[in-house]
Image 1: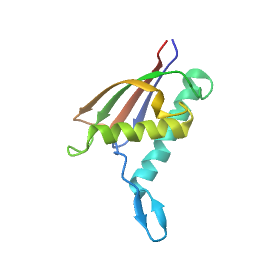
Image 2 (image 1 turned 135 degrees about the horizontal axis):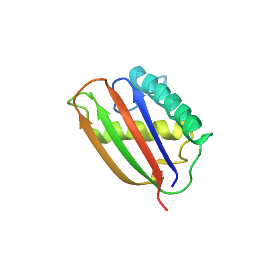
Image 3 (image 1 turned 60 degrees about the vertical axis):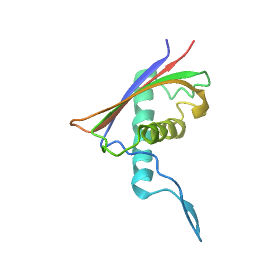
Length: 121
């Protein structure tokens, strides 16, 4: 079975809505930084566990544990952030591939996001 499990250190950050200004559209700096860091951890985990970044094109199942997320963070926005990071890292081609999701928000330290991606066969 094709499977990848990665723990991204730091506080989970929900996907932000793009801001629109006269000069264009941009994402919140906090989200942009988290996305960059999460993508790095996903790539590094893939290389360590699988020997390369897989760029899976098959349907996948994703299990997420958000430890120490803000109490007012919507779980769907937390999920979206992880899906964006998975695409940016090259683990999946598109978040449309995700056909099953299990997600939990738990209190505690250290703050982190644990991601398990499995190809559904």
